[in-house]
Structures are given as structure tokens and as C-alpha cells.
Length: 441
Image 1 (cartoon, rainbow, N blue to C red):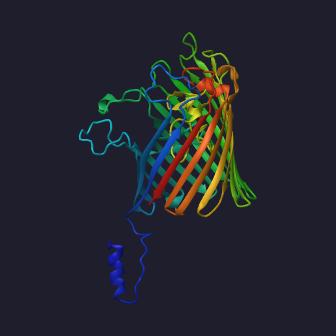
Image 2: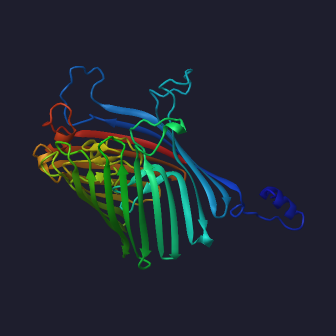
Image 3: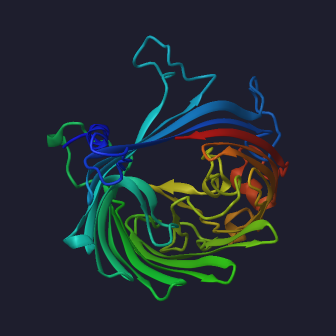
């Protein structure tokens, strides 16, 4: 196949200059990247200022770091591609040293390979597949929202409908050998299920699924979880939004007192909306995760197994989507169990974000509040905390932007009981500031 530049030169000899597009040239490579420099400061890591016995480093939290996210698509044909993306970082300026001589030194720059998969269309675009490592987001995203090895096979019998079969494995803590002969399927966390979506109209779409997990990574503590879920997306005037809900049913072997099984029956709901009015962009979100009853270790478990991902705009109560600092409260108040988070006290988070939609300068405000659903599992308290953040985004160009954020989290007694390490009654607010500089290619 003749290279595009050479083809243009040949054609130029027979007439005026010709612009040759590479949009339909195969095979070809498309590369993209995002470089993020970030600064973070927090006045404390919890709501308790009680000094520990050894406090040489103080109680503040902070760092400066750099993160690179390269993404490459290898387009073999118009209907077939390979995708790869990685995350180089977050590399702390005070820790990670690219000049270190020892190849096994802990201070080397961090590299995470995130997605590596092949995907394509079959039957003239009526069907397709994806196989490899990719971010798999379930119908609600509240149960499964992971970077995992998975395979998907989809079929679209009409432009308005699509059905998908999927299967994958969630990584676990059970040691696996690098040798093929030392690995099997006896200990693992297997995901499988089916989902279907249908466009009811130009403005309304519905999707439903059953996401199932069979977990045997802990001996004598196998878990079988089925999560039917549904989501409705729609637009009404200037308001665009979605409502999703999931129900979890299952069995936990050996988790009840005395070695008996626990029955899982839990739920989660989320409503999200955005609108533009008066030069502002507004985003609203409400999420609720069910709680367990007040008796730990009985035959019933009512706490939802949560992915740790939501549509909330908060950056302390839930994950900061600009950069996951991994200290958000929805995870810290929960226990990690086989790739998922479970909070026996339950959780409700409601928030609103308002941003002035300027072309270059975009100041905004985020306000959110959270409570538990069962105070008995949070030292008898209900209120988790109130978060307020001021944010300013500056877009110097399509590829160059920066963000400043300053905020506070005023905790309640429930937040203190579930997060503090020494005195569970202290409710000192956390003050936070962050800045980031982003360049994209």
C-alpha cells in the first residue's frame, strides 16, 4: 500500500495539489496522551487532631506529582482495532526517582498498564466483540466498574437495540503463579452476565442487565452474587438525566457466626441530572447504598457490594474524577471484600455542582452532604459530613488547561466514628487545596 504522502506527490504531477486524508487509510496508528501535574494539601487525614505517640511528620497530607496517560489505537482494518493505554504515575516528586541505579528500587517511576484489548465489528456491523483488559462498567456502574480482563460479544438486531454477553475475572489477593501449570480456576472471582439496551425514542433509552459474580478466592468462604439492574437515560427540555437501580441477592458461605451461610439482599439507587441555564452548567446527583442490619454475623447481610465509583461531583465524600487521590470517604468507611467495597452502615450522598460556563474561565461551586442509613453501625450517629468546594478551571486552549480547588469537609459523628483512628468522637473539619495542570495530545 502506498503511503499517503507518496500518493499525494504522485497525484500532484497530474494536476493541482491534492489533499489526501488519512481517515480511511489502513492499517494506521492513532496516538493520544494526557499529562497531569498535580498538587494536593489536606490539613489532616481524619477528623481527629489527637497527636499519636510518635508524630515526627505531623498530621497534614500533601504532595506534588506527575501522571502520564498514553493511549494508542492500532487500526488494522475499518472494522478491527487493537487498543492500549497505560498510566505512568502518579509519580511523587519527593519519592519516585527516574535516575536510580537499582532496577528493583522502590523509588522507580510507577507504570500501570490499564487497558489492552482487541475489538471489532462482524456481520456488516450487526455484531461485534471485545476481548482483553478493559474498563468494564455495568448498567448502573455501582456494582461493576473495574479495569479487568473480560470478553464481550454483542448483537444489534436494529439501530435502536443492542444485546451483550460478557464474562471476565476480577483480580484477587490469592497468589497465582507465573507458570501456567501452577494456575487453575479453583480460586478466583468470575464475572458473567447479559445486558440489553433499547432506544425508546430520540430522547429516551433504557438498559437492563444481570451481573453475576462467583467468588471462590477464599477457601470455605465462596460467594455467589446476582445483581439485576436497570437504567433509564432521558432528556426533557434543558434537563438531561438518568435514573438507575440495582438489587443484589446471593449467598456468602461460612460468614455467619458458627460457620453458617449468610444470605445477601441489598440494593443501590442513583439519580443524576445536568442542565444549562443563565450561563451556568448545573449537575445534580443522589446516590444511596443499602445498609446491613444491626447484628453483624447473623444469617442476613444487607450491605451493598459497591464498586467505589459514582456520578457524584464531590471530591472528598466520593472519588475525585480529575485524579483519584484514594482517600475518599465512601471507600474509607467501608471494608474491601474481593474487589468490592461494603459499608454495613449504608450510605447516602446528595450533591450539586454549579459552574459558570465561560469559554476560558470556569469558576464553580460543589456542595454535598452524606448520611448513613443505619446509625447502629456508625456508633449510633447518622450524619457523615458536609462538603463545600470552590473550583476554578482555566482553559487556555483545547489541549492546555489548569484547575484550582479549595474546600472543606465538616464531619458529623457518623463520619468520625467510621474514619477516625484514635478518638472516634472528634469532628474537626478537614481543609483541602488542590491544583492541576493538564496538557493533552
